[in-house]
Image 1 (cartoon, protein in one colour):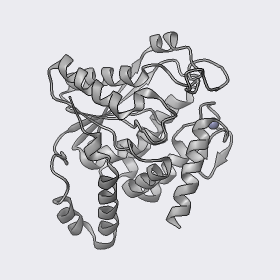
Image 2: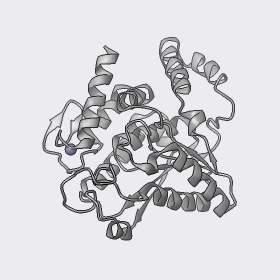
Image 3: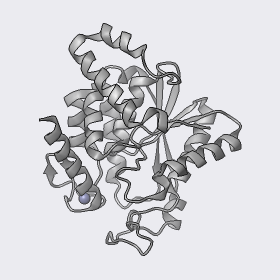
Image 4: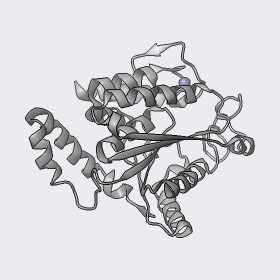
Length: 278
Ligand code: ZN
């Protein structure tokens, strides 16, 4: 498996894409077609299929919009592993349903959704994400929300599904910038996993991580670049991030408790993006 987050998610590449999107907005679709011919080589645009790890949160929603712009056919995969709050799975269905309608390319390209039930992951990972416990820092220096090896397990299942579906690209929202120290979000972990999966399946795949080097403000900006105000509104109203499953209070950045690490990260990113945009 070829790991290409460095190529596709580098700061230079994101700057390239942002400039392209702004210029296309000003000059129209013909300019966009010409500019796309200048995309760095090695990028498979509109020529293949992708499988997106989609949880119903902000990051994976932006990743799905990113994939829908680039691939002819996009399938999604999600995991029910006994999360503390079923609200995440409800948000997932809602966002999937709405995203296909608000992105011009969404309806035609959004394909099959795969939801895998993995109760064993909840059973073996005694964390604050899978049981009712206070979120604290552990002796290992990680938040108690850390589910050991979660992304390794998810990507392995995703690769197995992708193999069966003849899909060559996996897309995930892993990020080194705001990753709370989770070791399975690191670039090095994913590069190693990509090699292992490639050897194990004897099939060339690619893993794309478009958010790898973005902070949360840049993720909001990327969502706006990809789908404009409609996508930002969808993220605010329907994606779910709060670790506590809180949906009763709406902030400018969405619903949540406003205090857990996930809410704080999302709120700070939104505020920074708004400040930078104005
Ligand atoms: Zn929260």
